[in-house]
Length: 234
Image (cartoon, rainbow, N blue to C red; front, side, top):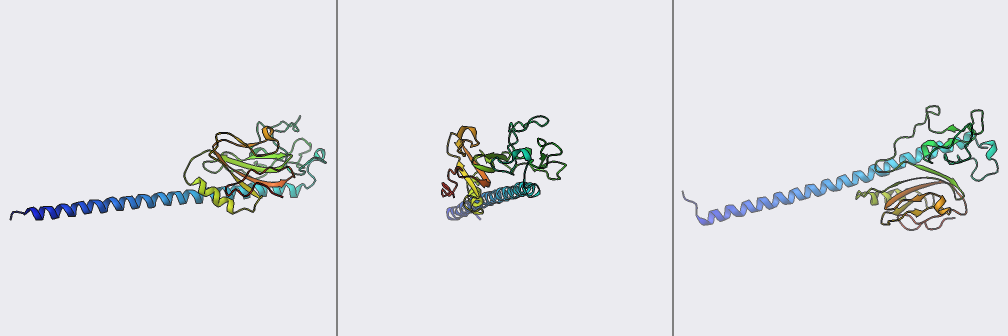
């Protein structure tokens, strides 16, 4: 039987409807997949950062509890008994300063192995504590012991879309002035985060920074976090 023009037109309409529905379904699935990937990225980032923050903080606190007087030759200096910066000129023969102040190099004052300059490594085979690689997308944790107090921090200059949400969620899990999540992602210049300015650490250009305080001094500098409320602290 020969099809009429009306029948051919009806068949074409059904085909076009099917194509439209398929395109809508594909777009919905892609959007759902994108949202799921973003949510997973947010969750993993917050979880990994929290886990390492807790591990680093507890390791330093264990050192302080075990050696509350610190090193004898550091008595009377600020922030005793917290570890000094690994790159400090304090470390002289028979010890030697490290090339930088990454957390993996910090040493425990008081655990002097027979010599006040030979502070024992907090993270090493001897201590049984091994610092894991930094969270995905982030740089290694660094340490600061200076006039503003003691903190450790990390940063990322990555542009993954979920990072902004992850930083906000992380910020919500800490008391004000306990930790600050610094948003310098829209700036092309580094941001000083201590009163020592050029002598102290900074939050790099185009980066998010996560800083966790262990002890603060009156000069401590707060530059505002992701919810813009940590610009001053007691």
